Image (cartoon, rainbow, N blue to C red):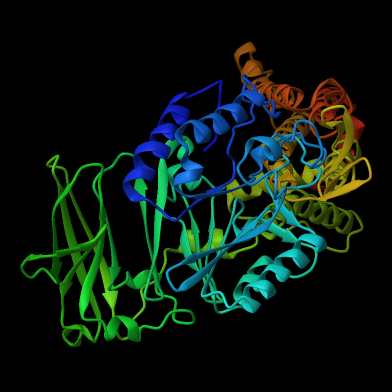
Length: 590
């Protein structure tokens, strides 16, 4: 939800409408609030801390609307609810006093709910870091051995109580949760009664992935919900004769229609659902909701005529059907709902009765089924190799050429020859080559900064993890940060230095005789100036996030600026003798 006192106050006012109007219209048995209940960002958007007023708004709305008396309200923490919190007992851990479940359940918990003859189990997964650092290094969740054991105990207890369905929910997607022992996916997947894992955190990736769903290999659905923060989305989910159905809805988009039988073909779970319940069914079943009286509900199969549905009870509408007519292939069912306000909604979905499957889109599958930390490490390692390998290869080739063991490679393509020559020249100059290589290697092993990772608590941040007091937090988003540092600063710096080193070599070899004009000098210096300005801006943002000490003791940001200035000075002022080795190889025109 990201309740904020600094921006977009409608998040709060519309949340109140949701607790009043939407909950009253749908009358759900349970509401799951899956983290990031508050925004916890400072007014400048760069700093992060728990804001008491935001938590008070959250609790005030829940109390004023009496929503926790209308329904079972299960909330859990997200990474924003854990910014700048040393431990669960900290005074600024407002979740414990201002949430519904926080007083009784400070982290993961289990809740059982009976409905009719069936027993439902809801397991909240709290993977927040402990301690909780300031942003941005709070993106990846972690389940330690204690939390993993607790989740396994929840499962064992659920099996003993003979629960019918188990629903998992938390803030972090499974791809974003590190585990010291067994992975969360394995824990969820090993029990056939586990239907779905519901989560948030990714925020549709800026609108590029609005429907982030997948069927995990273990057989359960993982469903990311677009946020309330910017998109005002919520999800309606239903169990109907053992079939799990859902629809994601824009707030105040009435009426709502959810087809529960036959179920959407894309979301079938063959390992957990019995398709025979659909084949043997005698009626199409639809749930319809609105803030006004429902006027009519109609169904349509495969573009045939519309059939009026009969109201049974509450939101349930049905119409008879002959499932034997649709036993093979993919078919389509559409439903139209009209309320007394003349508002209309038409939804369509594919269904299959022979097990024919539809495929989830590639990007949602990748985002939810991969391991985010592994992906981040791959990006970091790739750009590191891109920076180091070519320079090292050219240096080795240069040594071999100097020793007359090989001849300089003949390159016919002028553009490719130009690039190779520039990097080759750079690789031969010790005072440029070694600082570039060693700085890149340093970022993989050495500390990036020392500062207030948590307010009044000094921490040390490495690529592979963070130390705060006696606690160690494994690296995750740090690899992304390192990737962007190397890709957006170190790589351009290498290209700029290699170009100017080559230019100096050409002047030494007198292949470029004209002295550069003032305009040319301006264009020559412009790239490095832009690069330094960009890095200074990034250092300023880092200062806003972690304070003065962190920016002073910061090889990642501040010291890299100093390094760039020194190397830029060197490439323009170092003596011609530094180019002697390169000129011996590149003095010929071949």
